[in-house]
Image (cartoon, rainbow, N blue to C red; front, side, top):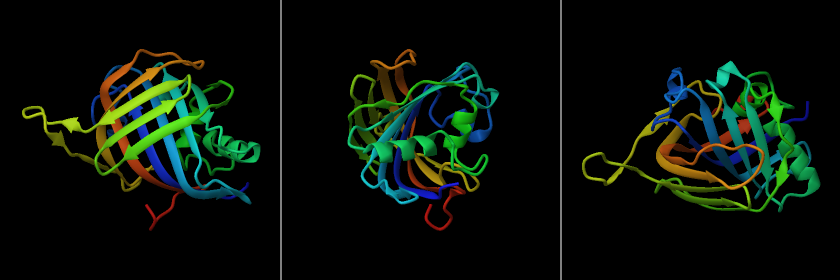
Length: 214
């Protein structure tokens, strides 16, 4: 197994209500799970291959809850990555070189028997975790826009946090509202409109969340 670490920012937009039932061990409120997830890597490595400054994304669809399997997935790696860097990210994001069940990437890949070829596309993004805003354009694949959850009465930004002391993805995440429209790729689903989104700081290795850093 090749050791690796990734430190950076994750943004995930799925089709469920704000908060996401998965975070509470509850079935998805719309009966299935669809998501676009983007990673902005600040530092990291896979063996001797550096990963700093890279971007990647995953598009996912499950007909039911994630743990029920039968999913589809397609990864996208930014064209700025070299072939060696892209191969390293693909191994990490398909659960290879990872202890069993220790990262969300392992789980997503395990629960997705249909894996479409990884794409190389430019990924343009602006993310602000503190403001809970974001704009992501994955060339020919997806457009994602994020804003704060609005207060149900006043419309002012409403802040909510998710804390998962034993999670395999993050220890704390900021909840937001997202919209995703797929514009290409092998996976198709209806646009996500004002659905659950979270920002999280990732501190991951082949053994899972790096305690003390998360």
